[in-house]
Length: 252
Ligand code: NDP
Ligand code: 8X3
Image 1: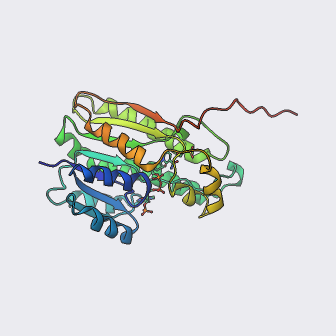
Image 2: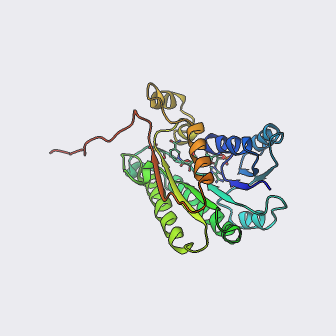
């Protein structure tokens, strides 16, 4: 019987690439996102390869998430892999210049949405037991601060620590938990972050040979396909072009 993956934020970037990767292996897919027309196009594209259920869902709407999870029909109800991918960064300004509503939206989505979907699916994943997985999209931003990262970095640090906490609490259930932390990756993420600034997008990725969504999808698929006795707690990925800089020192 085919396994089932529940992917949040499947309308672009990593989530869409993961949907395509799991579809190629015949998994049943529950694909979620806010953009209904994109979900419809993805369903058309992938339904020749696997069974696809699309849910137009905002992960910040806790009631809608719970209702959607509780109403999952067969064969989608037995979720083996939860990919908590939906997320966003808004803005690159110093904290003192940021808009509070953008901070709140990042926290509501990257933290609130992720815990809401996890909470709704934990009973199912525990029932599935050995071999099931929660794969959370953290980021290098949760490990390494940078100017203008402020709240986004904080949300991804939460994702890492929450992943470890889940590992502790799920001990004995067979459910695996991974914090996957990519670095510079080319996707609509940067257009969302900069309010659609194509120049910012082009300049960020120019000459950097960044991670592509398909690289992340191959990694996610590998994590989900590991032998059931193995758990990757944490996996940080960077393009070869990316490395650390020295601490900045402000001098009077
Ligand atoms: P994209 O912008 O391409 O994709 C983000 C996805 O999240 C979209 O499908 C979007 O769907 C969905 N989403 C955003 N807000 C909500 C919401 N409230 N409810 C439901 N879905 C939502 O970005 P990426 O693929 O690059 O990012 C995916 C994840 O990876 C994010 O968590 C991001 O923080 C993380 N990440 C990204 C990196 C990068 O450099 N690109 C590096 C490291 C981590 P829709 O708009 O249709 O709702
Ligand atoms: C996205 C990677 O470095 O732009 O999570 O914050 S970074």
